[in-house]
Image (cartoon, rainbow, N blue to C red; front, side, top):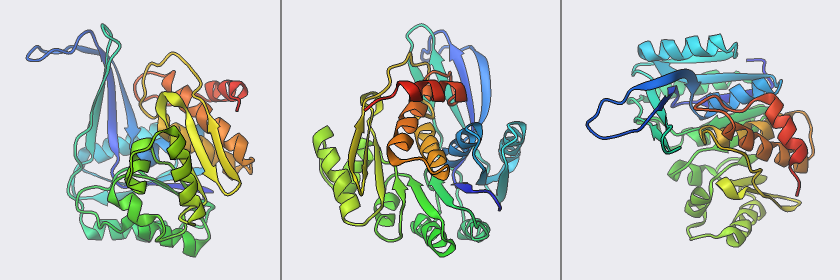
Length: 308
């Protein structure tokens, strides 16, 4: 694994996006404009980093015939990737845009059961990575040890890579402080879980800064959806409003945000500019339908329009 950036996706998906006139119970819903994409947090991050010109590889745990489809989709996008075989079939997620209302429906199934041996194989493969950024993104599959993201962080520390974490639930809270984390990207809800209290924007700034001051990670990027984002780092707290665009789909906005920031850091951009292009990429993702993610030209255009 010779790439500068490695993303790890332990619970990937084949993402299917389609349009429908109106979603109603009992009736057969006819869909159109089907799009098939490789999905899952780390895979989405890798797709965006590659579009921006970054040197990236995606490691994923996938199995069954749907795992074969996932690999074929990654090959079709010419994304460098390493597949670790899983016994269970890779899940299929379905996203439906309802044309009559403008609503979006997202159906995300549970993962197949995963064994400790499969996770161990992933960790063994990641241990060969000698690049600069290790990005662990997405949920853990059922059966994965709760300390999996901690162990990935230990590998990053031992190999001298910066560890970037984007997950939720108990494994997020337990990983922070257990291993060095360069950047963590919680939503406001996930930040509330970490801090153990209800937060508004003002208190979210404080909570994010407390995490940095406590030495749990170097940077906390809090995504606020239509309200923009907050970045706490050792130099202070930055706040950017959302770049308002006509939203076609919210799928992948957070992954695009994180990917652009990691890419910018890998290119030695200043913190402020890395944060700006992250917000621009999140907005650019909203401009594309279904699971298409952001377009490079939109990211750079919106970056020039993003101001503190």
